[in-house]
Length: 480
Image (tube, rainbow, N blue to C red; front, top):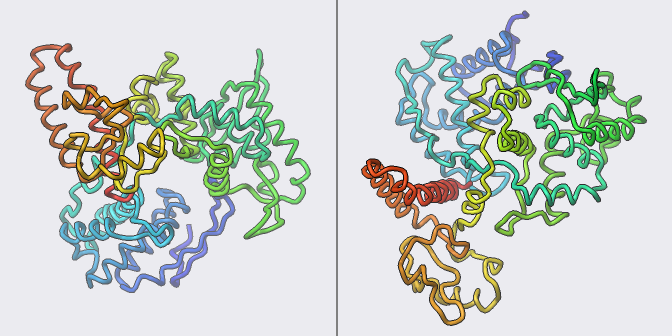
């Protein structure tokens, strides 16, 4: 392996044939780091991790050019070297992340964006503690709790059945063949979006006994997926894409000639050239337009926020719900350990439980509530005029329809909690009240354990809904 490059600008070509970015040139520009000491540390971090293959070139590129930029600016403004950082500095940096407005969206940084930037800092510091201990603090400066317990993933992370039905119905008339057949492949295989866009035209093989199997490279784990039985509609989708892209292959780069997802770029960078479809085009632009064009909405009447990864979660969930062994699901999804499958993908579809969570109304500002939350305009106008009087008698939210046909809702008369009612709405101003109520219920549940399961059944449903409410409200507070 060659020695570390000189200068502040490096050009490194990804020569890993198993990489999604094989053949791409990555430009590493260290010139924005003003401190010579920190710049030398970061160069060493990038080069050594690249040299031993500990991190992918694309990951190191993102760290340098995106995830660590704000941190290095912060350190410079604090007039400190890495070795001088303390936990107080990290707290201050986290506070900075909480209050930063994204230049791209004009909104506060989302929770995941904040966490990603702090994780990159942790990765740099921890690597230095092993390889350059004199350049970083000898003591721990992270508490480990900076971004834990907030905005945790809800268990209902699969695509609801009614949304799946809307998607499949819309696909019948979808004119973009790449999107249409790509979604069919994602639904059938649960492969990651990066693997889909690098799928080869020879991925389908006829099974020795009957049917077909599909093979692909799992770029995340740098290994080939063992042959997997595949449905006939997936085979047909791949055959259609091969047919559609046949005439483009002569114009494609040598490394892309056998890639399934190639197209002629219609506009922007590389207009007219033949190249592989990008992740941004497929899973951001196309997905967003597809959802809006076909008016695909969730249970709350909002446009469904579709992501490519949800197809993996839906496949794993469907398999578990049908009684498939967790180890089989692990093999299908390509996880290294079944604990990953259990933790992130295998949540049995419980329709009643899902419906309860869908009905929880959470909004950032009660004054921003839309008329779509009401049955008619008169109800909406009445609520706007009376919401500040707490007419519903709720101590932790609002009721959008306390009176029906002149009769007050019986639940309100009994002053019961209304968390699972579709008319109930809560806002961040009530977050602490929800946390206190949850703590009280959990304490009662713990103290009443001796009374058995029947006693617990009275508390557990409310506890589960409260946890969801708290997670969503915390997400709103963090700009998510």
